[in-house]
Length: 418
Ligand SMILES: *[C@@H]1O[C@H](CO)[C@@H](O)[C@H](O)[C@H]1NC(C)=O
Ligand SMILES: *[C@@H]1O[C@H](CO)[C@@H](O)[C@H](O)[C@H]1NC(C)=O
Image 1 (cartoon, rainbow, N blue to C red):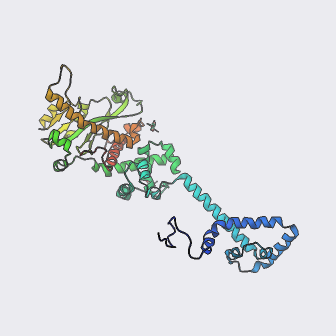
Image 2: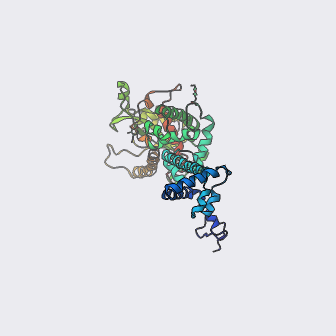
Image 3: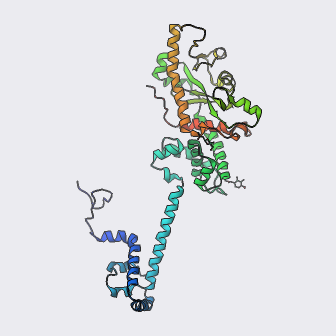
């Protein structure tokens, strides 16, 4: 293999031109310190008288050109005593300055490394990092999201964080459930600044990204209907629905405590209705309801039905007893058949139930993937996420779940239908 002399990154590279000289030039900065220390060592060894006279010489020579580069001297080295008279005060000072410079630089780099300021450079070219810290699939998607919301992020004032860092801080909290104090230390800001930024960015993201969670048009649905659905249900399935619950801290308010008590989870929770398209994309997410609400009541009252078109088929689990409601809308719901009160299911019932179970598994996988991506949803969430509504009656938990679902839709679906 021919290796060009300029191809330095090639592992087979060896200097073929300017042998030796190149090396000296390159290493001159890094060895300046060592060289200076050697000189000092040698100075120590000489007896005082010699040192004094040498010093005198140095002072006498002081009117030499101060701008003389010390590299000039380094070429000869300081191997012979005679040449040490060339070491003027100016040169020593220059060396000292250089050493201090290098030392400062080293400290700065170390500090930078320690606080790991999560800027764009940190993520560029490292999709694993992007995934780990943001849940997004790669740097390109992260930058798309950033440039999409950037014009609306306010920067300046007290906030010492860049717009990008504000976004990262927010994603980091969702992704890794980091506490406010932890983020404050990481970003070298106060915890109240963290809270303020998180709130502002969540407001922004929920507003700007909520379009990513929407029901596809009937044409879109039919065109890309996966085979497993075609075979089992024709092209009618519009959405597969389920509920999921998120743990919250125990409310002090008795009424709220009762409304959020989930007998199913034995914890205070909020409950959401989530809809997944046959393509594995989150196509609906409700607002948060108290964990006590029934699946049926939630589905009928959260606004989900506004998205239903005549002819739609909805798949759900037991408990979504909505045949009448959907029937009125000329739509249909299929749930696995209850065993209750029956000795045996009929053959068609068994087949139907199996068909539904086969595809419903995927909804659970999508819900699982949102929770796995955004650990904050494993809760328990602080009570103020649930209690305080903004002017539009939307709570932080509502925004949080919309953002987590929207961001999840930016990754390839965990559900891969052939
Ligand atoms: C800047 O300060 C003003 C007044 O204190 C405040 O209203 C505004 O939100 C601040 N902007 C940022 C980006 O902190
Ligand atoms: C998430 O963070 C909150 C607040 O810091 C904490 O109370 C909760 O235990 C964390 N959840 C998990 C699953 O670690």
